[in-house]
Image 1 (cartoon, one colour):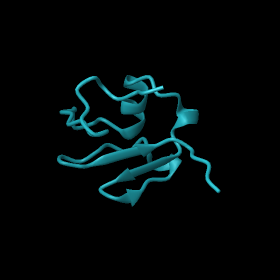
Image 2 (tube, helix red, strand yellow):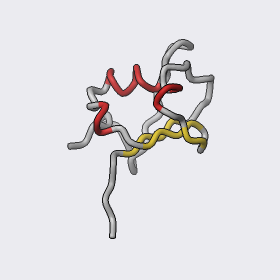
Image 3 (tube, one colour):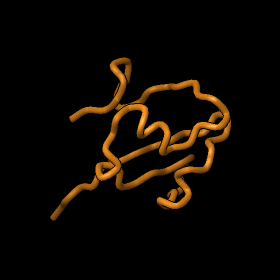
Image 4 (spheres, one colour):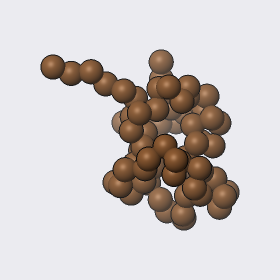
Length: 71
């Protein structure tokens, strides 16, 4: 299932959010089941689950990936 907003282009969307917005709040806002959130990066740096309730900074780039399987 695709959780990106309708205006996403090539899996990218620009959002304006309040200063106190956290990655987990965005996950919840877009109704992404937390079990579907495996890898979270802010500005290319991995964010552990315990740190996903820390607010984003202005101009941060947030990337979220589901669990994937490969061979």
